[in-house]
Length: 149
Figure 1 (cartoon, rainbow, N blue to C red):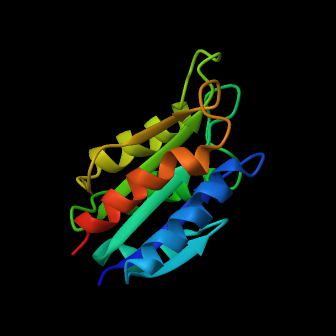
Figure 2 (tube, one colour):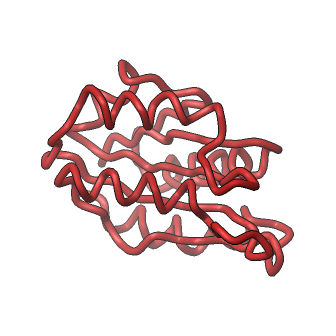
């Protein structure tokens, strides 16, 4: 099965809950999974040949949380083109803010710009509609895991 690195950007812990649930689902499917709460570029590099799952919330200003912003900046400033990367993205946000899921959307845009291949569609979870984001993400993760080779 596939090797998957899960990279988490969280403020209040909801993204971490989603990531931990994803880790459990993917492991149950037989994938080799490692979760990074504050992933670094060094942590990211091995998964360029495998799969990365980014699970991130968004600050009130539409930015990435402090736990994942350094990785985003390192990817943007030091990595550049990475067409060998396959990834998935789960973005958490609150639609009462102007830049709903802005952090996740920025991460997705960066990886697309770098030539990476997104596996499946991006999942956006709205805190206004879903108070338990891990329940909302469960079916998506199950499907995403089936797409991995």
